[in-house]
Image (tube, rainbow, N blue to C red):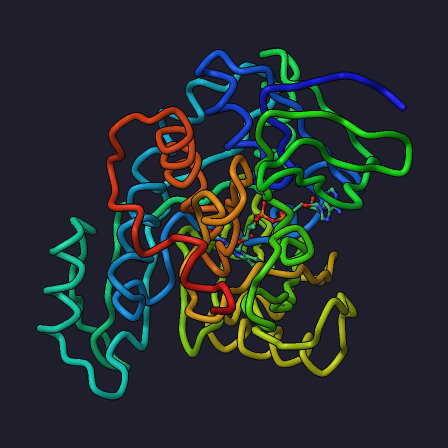
Length: 358
Ligand SMILES: Cc1cc2nc3c(=O)[nH]c(=O)nc-3n(C[C@H](O)[C@H](O)[C@H](O)COP(=O)(O)OP(=O)(O)OC[C@H]3O[C@@H](n4cnc5c(N)ncnc54)[C@H](O)[C@@H]3O)c2cc1C
């Protein structure tokens, strides 16, 4: 049993946990981050790294607002990282070949994108009009997570890999400690950022409020000849060119519990769609196939704020399909709320209360 006491313990070292830890460390708090496995190796490792919502206009305004705030914050976040690792952010732009869905018009899409300041151009093509978003960037997730980890270490965040939280101790309505198999770590406050596994640490949630949503991806080998220089998307399948010339193809959206199995049918479907989108990819070998579990919430909004019935128990999860893009903004919002500072975004739509059983 250890008697170490931190100002703040963050449960989960994904993008949400690490950006939260850095933002909180900057306020002068002592911060520890626990992960039950290797830090950064779950959804945040598995994602595509696109720093903009896909079909952005289809999201509720509060989801779009935090995602756009996050994508705008990325250059400053990356510039602040204290590591020799390059997250390979590339501004490639994104072309959406089937932008206008049922009940949508060119004008309604333009109004939403203009309203949040996403630059866009409608461009004619042989297969119809496409939408070009010139400012969209992507990052290489594993490199970003490694750079965040190195920075957290350099800035004095205490990192506890392979140390699963088993529960949060609450006394007289106040959080007090986090229990692990090898001892209890005491803290004034705890931030639950355990991604798809967060529900276990948030007492009183309505069943099914938070859940995993599997996403499968694949990657094809670097080939100079493939010529793809932008993110390209149709029918919910997207292609992302990386700095080394490889192309990442994503993704499925599957409700399969905590199962990260990669299945052949889904992979063949993704690969076929990718080759239709960019025929040169048919010549390239698939080098990697994987799946990750996005942290979903029942109303698709992130979950951020203090538990209304437990002092000191905070939550930052529910990033779902945009958790990487929104992370710098949710971390800022969390740190502002925890230190009583003014917030750049209205926190109301993200509050924990909405998911509690009455
Ligand atoms: C296939 C796929 C494609 C995606 N593409 C994009 C994209 O292009 N752009 C975008 O913005 N988003 C994308 N996303 C979504 C994004 O990756 C996630 O929303 C985001 O990574 C969630 O981060 P997180 O930190 O909340 O969760 P995670 O990264 O899952 O981190 C949670 C951490 O908590 C740890 N943990 C769990 N239980 C415990 C415990 N008991 N004790 C201690 N630690 C624990 C886990 O080990 C894990 O490291 C994608 C996701 C997937 C799966």
